[in-house]
Amino acid sequence: MKTAPVPGKSPGRRNRALPLYVMVAPAVIIVGLFSYGAMAGIGIAFQKFVPTNGLFGSQWIGFSNFRTLFSLPSIWGVIRNTIVISLSKMIGGIIVPVIFSLLLNEISNKYLKRTLQTMVYLPNFMSWVILAGIFVDILSPSTGIVGRIISSFGVKPPFFLGDPKLFPATMVVTDIWKSFGFGSVVYLAALTGIDPALYESAMMDGASRWKQTLYITLPGIASTVILMTVLSMANVLNGGFDQIFNLYSPSVYPTGDILDTLVYRLGIQQAKYAISTAAGLFKSAVSFVFIVASYWLADRVAGYKIF
Amino acid sequence: MRIKPSFSRRAFMVFNTTLLALVAFICVMPFLNVLAMSFSSKIAVASGRVSFWPVEFTTTAYAYITKSSAFVTALGVSVQRTLLGVAVNIILIILTAYPLSKPKSQFPGRNILSWYFVITILFSGGLIPSYMIVRYTGLMDTLFALVLPGALPVFSMLVVMNYMRSLPPELEEAAHMDGATYTQSLWFIVLPISTPTIATVLLFSFVGHWNSWFDGLIYMNSADHYPLQSYLQTVTANPEQFFRNSSNLNSDLAVMLGLVNSRTANAAQLFLATIPILAVYPFLQRYFTAGLVLGSVKG
Image (cartoon, rainbow over all chains, first blue to last red; front, side, top):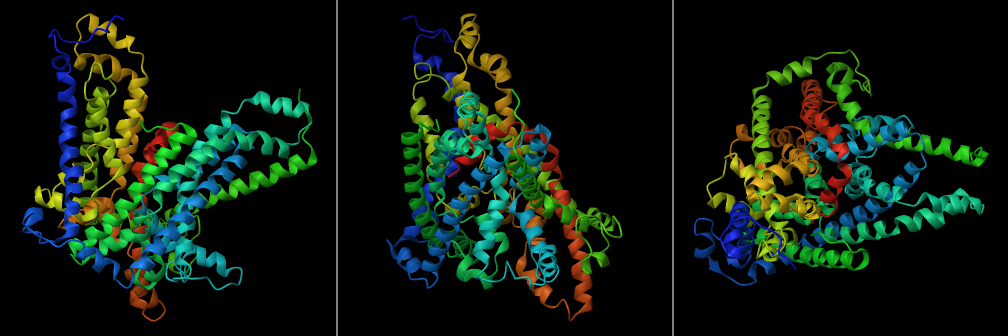
């Protein structure tokens, strides 16, 4: 086999690859410092950490921080809240986009379809800071437009963001509201990939629209649905920090406080660095298992590779 | 062959179109409401008469906001961090994706280096260790604290790398035969044909930088170094403050007037902050499918 021509005149492979190493060097250094440096910093979780002494000057105390963390009165509630909210978001985040894309697929008018898509994709690109600013206003029971709409039916508007019973559901619904449109793009792409000849022959055989959906459309997107489900597993401990941090308040902590918000309050607000790092490490370690498992499964069931 | 649709099919289509139109309206309804409030008088907003169209049209909220120095300062910081951040992102993405797209025979150690970057997606040190790195490197309170920790968006890099890997190697081989270096073939051959992919990651990097708020909140010591989203986080998305005000609503007229004033002002601020996103939105839409790869697999 003839070898492909490569630049450079020097004989060694490594010397010829030198420019490539030079190109990749800045990223290696920056990622090394900020990502791997932070990974080394999980040592803080096993220390009686004093910032001025640094990682190397602080005293090592084993698993003591984890014992403190898991004896916090709120910790099990926080873990439960995290899982309840993230699982609900995962389930809704699959079902709603699938149904939406199936319904949108039935629209034959190209311009109507484009317009609808433009409208539903929009919230996905707004930050939770902006959306929280909007939701706090429109969901206010006394002055918000949602409250006014509910009142017009003669019902007393609930306090969506202040009532602990309603808060998790409000998070799930507003999160799905933000992301379902963009989430449907992948299913719409799968739907356009279905061979039209299948529908034609089904029509010849007298299959109804419903039968066609059941036996052609759904099997046609099944592999995509399975892939997205598997990949979403990685989020099992992601309750959605940006959203909850910007919308919660102490009155909803019993049902709305999640691991990430706890990590923030312990670490940044109360400066309990070591316990906060322990909580963060607990989350990262569990997430690591789920992310690796989800990528492995995605490769096994759908041949999906990230690189 | 054209078959006239049956009655049940037509009934379904009417129902379906109505339902989807309603769903689409619910998606933009909050934005319309805020936009209408920002152009309405505070009295109209307070009396709950503003829905989706301005009532007693006025631009005073915008006049007030654009005169507020805090807003203008934060806007300036946001513009700077976005320009610098996107530039750094794109340069590092290209410089990393290109070598990693080469086969092992040309770039020994490629697989190890790929894993070096991928591992950072699978596992992260978490909030406090990342915060400490920024503190120890002396980046606190500087623009670099918002740019350097996320200087290489690994997912975007992988997307570009996968694209470059899919290009036929003959394209570059001819140039290399004529004595072109890697830098030259990257610049003159690979980059020009990779523009759609690079445009995609550029847009997502832009949206990411414009929208990020948490890093500004924790890495900036003084509020006049906050980017726009961090500033907005402190002034609008503060439910505790909001609830405290709203409980006084009926009793204290002065508080009520103050609040209502801040409601229209907030609406104007929120809308102004979304303008850059709306401006790139048509372009974003064009690159949705490729961008989806970025969004769907985030750990």
